[in-house]
Length: 347
Ligand code: KG4
Ligand code: ZN
Image 1 (cartoon, helix red, strand yellow):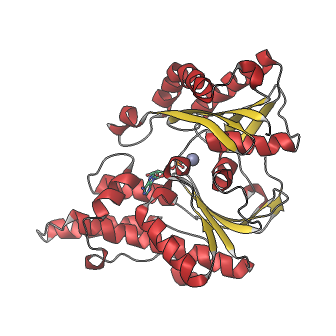
Image 2: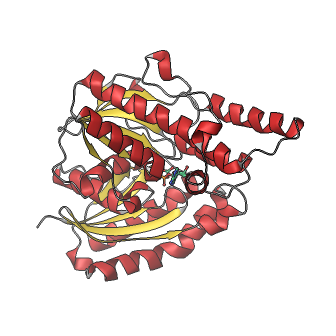
Image 3: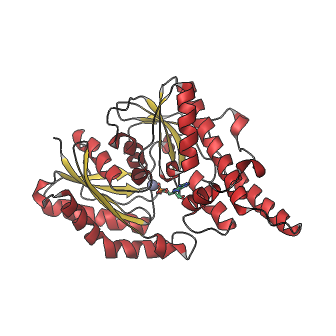
């Protein structure tokens, strides 16, 4: 049946708790703060921490109730320890630590990025390794080679903005709401990407690194030039063209990594993997090239605690527990400190 792990996630603007037993998710809940930050056009760190403090107890009790779990059923508490917003992380780490200490069970510190990676295996526990993993979120755009021993090799990463940031900043310029990814995704369905073509940054460089800041500038200039010329572009077409540029680069690089590593499997995870155009193009390319692919369900793409609990379960089986002096680490890295191409053990 496996161990029962409570997972807590408070690294950004979702207060999330989940209970997993073995490979099964018993309950995964979250309180989203999008309405708090929406009017500011982005996450306000101080407001995020305060809202986590207000909501964390209710969310965690609801997840325990939803799972039908008693405190005595828990084998460990897993909590996101970084990367993320320092004050926000501190809330989850403090609660997780207090709970594990009071219950006399191990505390497990989880790297948020590893949580996203592990989300690929929540619904497909048999998905093969080694495989290439593309992590695309608000803060990260990374390509890893994941090995069965739990190590990750960094293959490429963004040199500037993350893909989610490109969506969020682009949406702001287009006058759409926060978070921008879902807003562009929705609007782009009504537009025609062929009418407005944006550059595909870094596509032909042969490198597996990404760069999205130039694309953002292209959008800025496009909108400025249109305004100067007295033109009113169809915003849905602009959104579709902008989205297409991001998506094409992500898909091309992901499959280039699969080719280069000579593996037949690709996992795509993180908030941006919820994008409908990205999902469609990935499926198309995977079936053309005979690559086995996993894309988590939408609830497991964006931040959630099931991925933290699932990641905690892996670490529990390896006996990798945290000390009571575990601290939140806003800049926690998975492999980056060793530089591209390096291999190290997670967390
Ligand atoms: O993984 P996530 O929930 O949080 C981080 O760890 O950053 O990712 C959030 C990011 C945001 O930038 C958001 O705009 C983007 O994921 N996102 C999307 C979609 N849903 C969320 N981007 C494009 N299309 C979507 N449907
Ligand atoms: Zn995330």
